[in-house]
Amino acid sequence: MTEYVVTVDLDGVTDKAGLMDRCARALGLPDWFGRNWDALADSLGDHTVWPEGAVENGLLIVVRNWQPYAKALPQEWETAQEVFAEAADRTGALTVALALGGSS
View 1 (tube, helix red, strand yellow):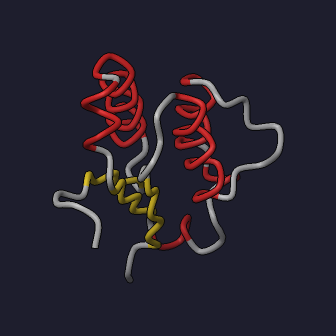
View 2: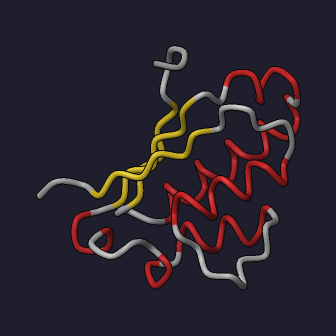
């Protein structure tokens, strides 16, 4: 089986609100998604809000164009990485990968 791949493109994101919006849009999170770190962690670990097909095959989230955000807001980015890592550690079917390189 092939993992279900979702790309979260952070190109142009300058703050936490932008990151939350991109995650919500890419993952198709419900309208009630709280757009905070706890809500993101909960959503990443909750199979019921994953895209259709992801539960059966596993979910691979590829985060692209994250470097400018990380450079501009290193503490926020550190928190984002912790949320991604903890969710992946807790949820065996979830993998989060940071794409290296620039825009293509």
